[in-house]
Image (spheres, rainbow, N blue to C red):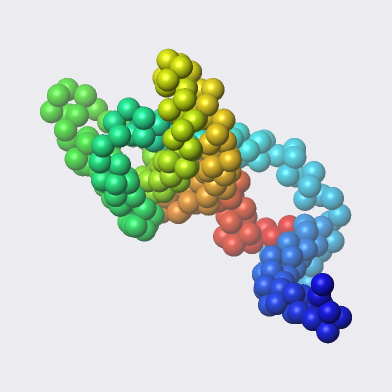
Length: 262
């Protein structure tokens, strides 16, 4: 039992983290909610109270609906590129190739060490529709690279590819490590019973790896939308006409560029 003298020690240990969480998370969220009822540009000394007008504008403006659809498309594409594909490749490496797993981890993880700004600039140069290496190569075989910066959907695809270049390897290692933690005796027992490999993966391996896969799925959605902010800011700035913007970048644009804090 904890004596009365020491029962407050755990609370004192948690106090620094609680203060930091309160200052940098709870108070800013509360103040942002407070500002949502005002029309303020971060500069004027007074704030104009507008009630629920900002919320009406948020849900009735066609531009905001477009931004939400873009965000949904981002989420779906990021989940496919950064969760489904890494999962498939980790299954192939673990149960079909088996050799050189350490080499695959290193190869896929190397892009994670580079800055997204660098990645955005490199991809922007490689995929330049006029003078980029990919455009020149396609031109030699009689094809042309579409001007993806003028198409919202194509720009979103390219921006997600840049983000995947950064995130793919990290998710691959997490999923491969999760598969490696599955008890081998369960897999051996299934193989002795001559269970087909696809049934073994679907009915045994995937359910046993559910905890890691759910964690990676949530991480993919949260970090993906955070990481894609940098390529948007470097390459498209949300264009053409907000065609490649998403909720995170649109929030930044309204708050710190257009000064519409409400």
